[in-house]
Length: 428
View 1: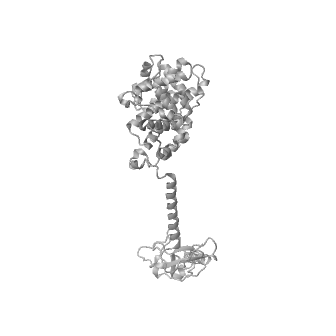
View 2: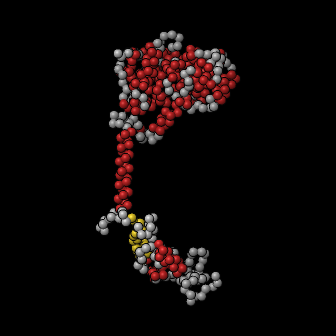
């Protein structure tokens, strides 16, 4: 395009309509000393009207209602040229069905369906605002109904007192334990795995676990370490056959691995060798460590009964006595091979149920316990009855490690409590 004729107002050339040079694309800057004309002085007929929004169902079915304001609403930093005004006018003719008055610029357009536009002229609240508020009220009502369905009135919210405690993770605790419950089977073993072993049996396993409980007590390790140790032993023996002379080596090595996973201060290998009466060398322990972690594919993070014990004890509103009795029950179950038939969450719930029966001397299992453990009293009875029989014979025979541990003042003499014999009574 060549230099335009100044007499032709329809084409924009090198000079601005208002006399300023054109600098860059889309920007019009006035030369020093030259003043721009106020936007209010520009003829509105040249500017035209911005396009209004168009209905989705067509121009005939809906009306575009535009609230108009004065032309002073256009930003002063963006002058309007004749060509731009002509383009706006052309678009306005195509998009807007109703002609708009000159010197008026639409600033706010709201598309309202004819079927929905039932507001009276004196109404101050738009219909879409009313619809939105009604929808939000309905959503709030639905959430309240869901909460009522989720937690019955007879169930206590055990996390309400820990809302301000960041360590309690109240926002995530339900999801965490739902995940534990869904994945607990990944850490379980078959109760028939001992049939695949050629040189060891259930009795040898019981002797090993009972001895490890004494070692755990002597080293003053965390409760988590003991439960993970037993889990590692069972999962390894399910996948790998071992001779009886190396069974104790498997036990001390599993405890070493559990300490590395759970403890802050880990016992050194030499301490485990000494506690084993130097039956194994350091190299044998390290070689067995490699064999175990490779056999288990380094999967050390599995839900054990301990993680459920802490949550379920909170649901039972336990005191120190009930807590010690519950752990006494479940550690007795760790020694027994037959208890592998029950998942970790059920073992924890049954231990607490049995301990409550010992303390109260009658059957007690609240709706709060049912809600948080997901187990009813009937589902726990079989496992609980077996725990009662273990309690009855705890101080007899050769496997007395758990009984000795819980016969001390540190553990509240929990082993001396009277067993819940009434749970074994058969109803006619």
